[in-house]
Image (cartoon, rainbow, N blue to C red; front, side, top):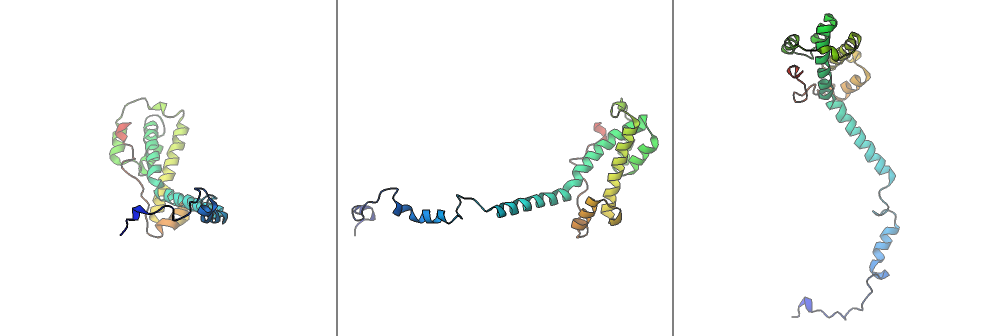
Length: 183
């Protein structure tokens, strides 16, 4: 029996390397317009882009609270220090009662020494920051307790998408939250 490697190359007539006969199937495929050379149709690209954007928006709506909570908490620490030392004690107590600062953090902040007047240029700015943080904490509490009528439009959307279905979004992550002792 003869080896398959000892085939006679003269059995077939030699065809040039780039002859039409060799690449005819590929040419027919390219002429169809659905090949990879022309890319995907625009509708499927738009569909994938819209789907990816919607998925990112849903993920942001679900996981936004830990990031916003960390932002508001760091702002609340500075605001509390300013209001406690240079501003309205009532606003400082309202900020502490909102739940963003724990009792131990409030006690630690009450005993801190420093020049905290550099945090804000006026007591009105500090009071506005305190109001913003208190409003955020009220919205977070209303979302978690299901008070649909009192929620803002984004809160209502989050309630309908997640809370109503039993998926309670996380409110804070300890890895992101600043500590009152670091201030």
